[in-house]
Length: 427
Image (cartoon, rainbow, N blue to C red; front, side, top):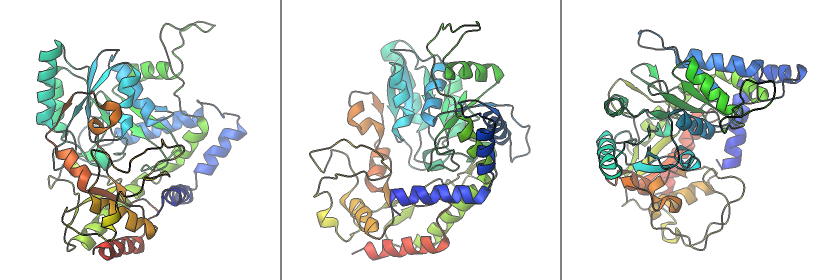
């Protein structure tokens, strides 16, 4: 499906399944709470807290607090402020991710230091993480201020190992679980292991508020501090006085109303994504050269499969491969929206293989969006001067990886059609 249709279908699927969104949104208008605060925001936060604090392993529930915000990117930004990140500091960020994981570091005048991936989960490699910590301390005389691992496509990262390293060196962890809403590790919800956990409710996420995000905090004091920064950092006077720079980052009461309804279908959405993943695995298991990305066999891993990702062997021939990268792209693709920056060349120094690009183009003709995986941040021109600790795994995956539709609008018949198209694409 093309991006616009996919987004429309997603929103329709969300809205039609729950039925409560319209009720809560109407209440917001009827009571004139059409502002970035209000009863829907408070109730949505309580719903998120109940979910985040739940465990499926029978152990004692957690007591995390949640602050609803205007975007997942805002949540990353405020989490870094909560960790004390300031201009000139370094923050260790997973390279294999979307730019929202690293851009907030630069908002603060700090420097992202990128850490490569291991090949099983595709997430931050604990060995490279520790290597980076030791090396940065030796070279700068101080430790990085925070660590930002990412649940890429909803896949839990090596939480035990990364948390052990972070605790050993006393570095706070900001879990970017924007793609991992509802994923669990050992029964515990992602975003509740570190000092902060980032959630996103963008239109393409597991649940949506049309836009928006949230930050999971360890306790009420930290949540109140985040709330203060998210509401322009106003001091307790009868007039406006500010002792810190704040931001207009609170979620609107209207969007939160949508979120309240969405919470009622979250578990259904997670189950659907897992079902779609299993169906892809079954239908593609005998297709030569195509390999679905799966969670480790370790039972502690419980991915939500926000997107179903796969790789394509370099020697697989795809129809149209000879003309891949021959024309400069002039329109938004791969989930982009709005204005894109014009380019002069159809190629870069780090791009998917020609057969992966040919598959994307072939599938697009079939009205199926076959999206490239994230390009590693350390290969982005804007971060050309950033420090990086890598073994090349994320770059290698980027060259052979692609994502397939998995949302609530995707039926079993759709999956069969998509797999048939992949088979047809093979020369």
